[in-house]
Image 1 (cartoon, rainbow, N blue to C red):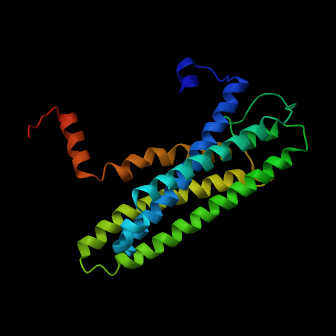
Image 2: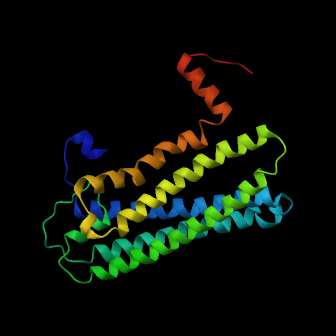
Image 3: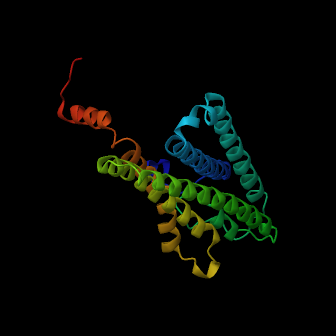
Length: 231
């Protein structure tokens, strides 16, 4: 946003490091929280009588704290390791933000294999979260299909399928971005993949979580038409 407003493509070294840290921090936190959300939905639909026992306020607080702490540690490791590498191939990144694969292209050190190893570990953790999410949704859909009301089944699928689709897009494109071989790299492909995992999912989140809420839609409609309603 700063670059767009001030018509510049420059970013400081510390600003680039901060950007990498924040991207990894929020990326990991979102993935871990999505995993927790899928477990929450699984318990609420498949084991409703055990919900209060399995997901009490203390358990939710512990899971949320673990998600944020793990995301912070993950981001700190990647940022510290990436920016400890010497850069000798210029300072031009072929991307609209500081992305680790683009920074590694500027490195002249063989120690970037250490960062690739960290990325591989992170990808394995992310894949594990994705498998857990898919397994949870399979169990949820099996329970939903047993709902006798067609309207109830439609409502359940209409709220959960878009969420699963965005999670799949978010994870698959980021996996491909960080794991694709260098021979498949091109400026246009790198840009398209980065947009798909960094811009599209956050843009779709309001459609999935908010615009399906009738009270939210009514409030937006009143705001657009300038109408007020007294209660």
